[in-house]
Length: 270
Image (cartoon, rainbow, N blue to C red):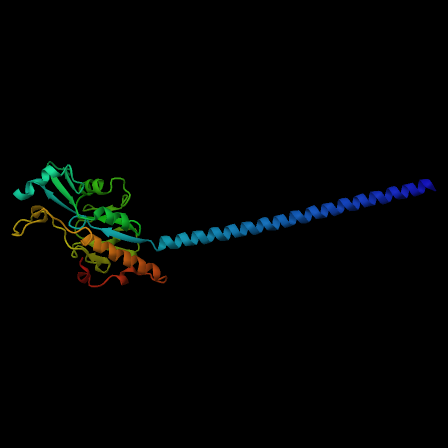
């Protein structure tokens, strides 16, 4: 009798152990299932967040605005040293000490003087925050590269986005840019070189620092003065560009930047 009872107790004890182990196994499985579902949920959230960020970045890239800048008479003035008037030759001695004036040979045996337009460095710094910038000049490639070594030596502003006479010998066209023409602003002193893209153009006042043959009035150089930095052409253009950029950003459904540029562009000559 004692043996039977003892055997029975042993059986019950084993059943309880098996039951406890079974409950523990079930609990572990439930935890594993919850962990798997939680991990799946986190993965889904990460994917959704990543997709949203990608979409936002793509949207920003789509809305990236472009600014095309002419060089001569827009950002700089270049003249042969031999063409300086007698009253301008004092600049030859000042070139080494001035940051807005350089003497150089631009791939030729002739010597040139390059004069930066007032407010140029500030203009490039601020415009670069709003636009992808390009240079488009009727000068040749060597000339453009020498000028850019002076105004953008580290290729911070323009990189390799430079179009010259070799690619565009007669007129200028936005067809050579990898950009949506609806999101491009052009700043140039000459309208006629843009026969097909006048709607994109802001005409800037021609910058003439040195004496022009046949003129009777004193040049800026002869008068030893210059355009105003704070109220000059580049400063005014920058204010307009900042306003255009702001208005474009505020119009979330806007697709055409040209609608914010006054037309005809002659009414917008700075």
